[in-house]
Image (cartoon, rainbow, N blue to C red):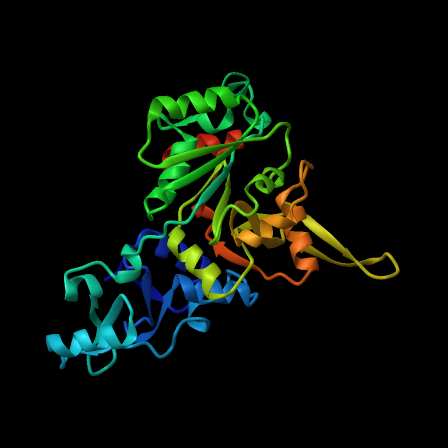
Length: 349
């Protein structure tokens, strides 16, 4: 029970860390007497962050305060099944007459099968931008293309692809330029079960320029990812979030906390000191380099021109296209393109 209960005065950040560790993907918010106050899921946290709640906010203020419950006095199988089917949820807490938590039931336990959303396959195309020189990982990238840098004895590109094939994606496109022959030879030798198509960049075209070669190629939203990042999240949730909100582009963004290790001086309009903020903390949503993109958006990319994904987003918003953000926990984003993060990657994967 302690794995899925959380006190109402815990922070959103604490809840995100706890949710990453529990298989149930739901926390039961309680007070000191184990009385149920609500439930909190990834979706609740995502909505709270996008509503500009700081991650230092207490979970009691953002949780679902009217959760579905099962009374301890009514544990009939048919009644429990009916509650699950009516509400389409994965977990329901069991409470006593005082509304204290005494247990919980899961969809898997009741029906003997995985929750339908968890088993759903999404066969969406995946484009991996693999043409860069990987200068931040020199001298390794003087010998190997960045996608083949090993993490736990497996090239990073295989770690990335596995995240997609696990949810049913079978068509992988790699845009290549730097040391392209080595990358192609690797996959030829690998003979994977999924289909790999190489898109040759005649010259470096930025983080989005080569997507123009795939314009008019797809009839459904596609994943686009950098070749040096891994997101530890349910990619089905990202894809469904994109579609259900009718976005044209969805940016997966990581929450990052930064602490200035000094007292910062705040000035008045006349230049005199107003106050000193001791070691202030700031929160940002950082672009991770993973996106879901509607196929028609690719036509906005100019031909044979250097063009970053940030340029594409700016161009899309300028003509009224909808760009969404899918927040993930800081610990869910692994940026292998930096030496400091690369050294951590082996422990996190």
